[in-house]
Length: 328
Figure 1 (cartoon, helix red, strand yellow):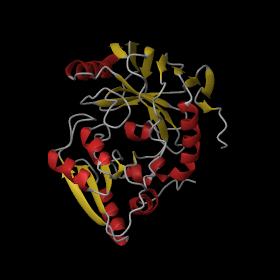
Figure 2: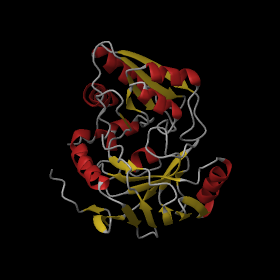
Figure 3: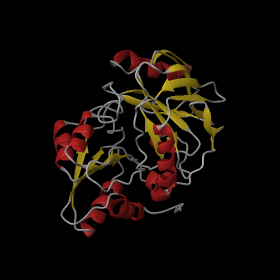
């Protein structure tokens, strides 16, 4: 079920009550930055108080890049919380602060939309429980897979070994137990490929982390698990500047499959990468309790449209259409 159009208050109530399961007395830390629409933390705090929880809003300065660490006081608040929700303009999911909070037993969402429109419309209005049923089935298939291949009409042709890597994000934003973490909007299954095994071409289309809407597709040549060449107009130049300046930013750190039928593809990757029938491939960090071994100061997702995805040679997605059975 999707609401289609909702108020921030309605979605905040659903998030706090149903997806995060806040109970009386729990400490709920809401991390935002100066770009976050004020309605979001206000409604989350209101919904938390209504359930007897104890909300604290922490406002930080915007980080330079997705994956950059929050200030130490914010990280400490996250680690001391029972429940965390981060709705800053850059993702705090792939950070040491998130990993420390998770190890301390905090549960919650470490990357959520920071614009109120993204809470009222699109992917945040979808039923994350419904999406989770498909996500669990896809995660089950991925656990048995040795090699993934992704191709697309724009030129993506990437192979990667995933043996032993646990699928992540299949919680689809439903985090009700200690240490469970996810991202909003719910709607993906992802994992870090085995380091050094990714080979081929990735073509980012439409939108990417920290780059926004792309002027033209960005073509990334991958050898030995690393981006060795980046081409494609002004966005490619900006991406090359990041990769050249941040150690290990060239690492292929994630492959994620979007599952949210209400997600819109616009200028924000947070929602776009959840769109049903898409894939996103990330550069940079794959560690910090995500399952990989590369710790990096950035994590940058880029969208792949109309992908065909094969698990050990068997198609699970064809031209953006999911073809596996979701029955248990």
